Length: 258
Image (cartoon, helix red, strand yellow):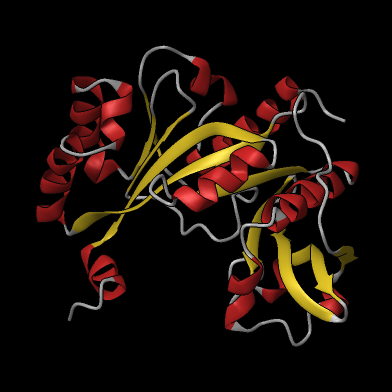
């Protein structure tokens, strides 16, 4: 299995491709601001270039921006402590500065990486089976919408299912969002929750991913307590945070406005 340092280095290298910087930039103590550009190795679901994207692995902020937003973002990340740049009330300052230029803060997420010293296969009260793309046909339904993506079926490459007899009751799936990493999503039917199924599936899938030479990662909103708890129970630990601005009409559409 990879060491924690190797896992972290893979993640930073991927974030560098996404942001258009050098992996070492995430370990500096001063903020770094770079011009966002498309990159062939970026995560496949990203729309590049960014208008404004802030990433922190805990040391500093790397801001990937389009040139017209550079002055605004540079002033913002230079004014507030790293951790406060990713939360209100300070985020209102950035949002208010971006709004006249047609941008709003949109996505905020915390990302988790497996801890090689903790990750292990956890017991499950039900049978678990490793699943492959051919097994996913018929599973693109709301019950499994976190584990599988109906919008990017071609990226769903591996899963682990829990079965009560012949009934699928829980599913962890991963998508090939980039060449070196696999993002894990998890769903458990409501009547089967609180039995340790989610963490058993998540940890098993993480191990399967690592055995194939890839790095699993897990994303959750900081306010999604159930998801964050599952990440921790499954052997994952917080690794980086990210905030992304998008066009105002995109944000409004997501909010059902207009």
